[in-house]
Image (cartoon, rainbow, N blue to C red):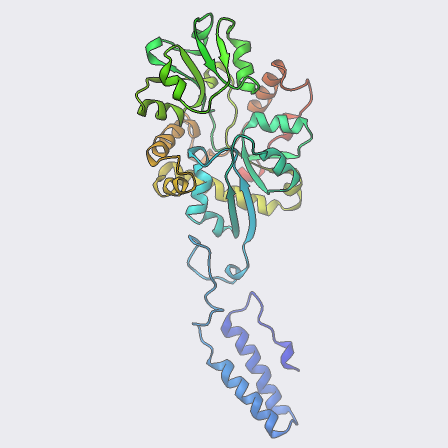
Length: 377
């Protein structure tokens, strides 16, 4: 027997590890023919090891902020570093993911998550598919467009059931639905016509008399022109417009039948095959985060504001209120948060094919998502 036979493993406590070393030393001292000087050195080593107590740094690893306070053998294992890429600048539509970070749900799953902010030209789909990042946040229509281009991206969780996409118009104009835009002139509509929702709207509603301009990215022109509408998200631009004296009304694209899953948690198919437990951990923590955000958003909103100072706390508070009925519509139970249906994916694929966004039979909707990790316990 030699002292080298005793090792402190990640599954051993301090007392167990030191006890093993001391036992080895005792055996050597009692049975060795070593000179007295060497035995004295071994005895001194044993005394020093015996002085170590539960206050040693081995007993108290540095846990990530917000993680569970109890120390277990597994908590000394280094967390797995992953990146979550957002499709836009941090705002309420990302609230649940930030809540999982703020409240330590990612840490509890053994994940060290970096949330990367997005913007108008950030290629989330491409970055996920190529492995630049492990996870991303994007919408269902963009995911299908990516899969047509052979991007290996799969949705694993849908926190927002009903799309917040809308056309924002003035209440004073008496426009009650998107159908009311038909034949209306003079009227200006600002939207990105290359996006599927805009193509669907132009197919469903006669906008031949409408002047269509590019989306400006703010509400300045909306506030100046009463006969003006623009694309928006119901949890953001309407609040800004109202705060600046406007009279916004949201005409929801979902009411016209175009209802895409929004803020999906996505990853690449290869990661699902090779590291399913990693995907399961990320999904579990994200679902917990969304439930927390919808119930208690304040702490998370403060963190989002720190990441994006243009997004005020008042806007974020309005945003989470507007998201509540979109994440949990009608009798949709909180326990089902994150789930998706094949029917919705097939419907979206059919609509995008009809408007020419997707070539016929170019994608298999059932391959674009999985419920494996949402239903796992």
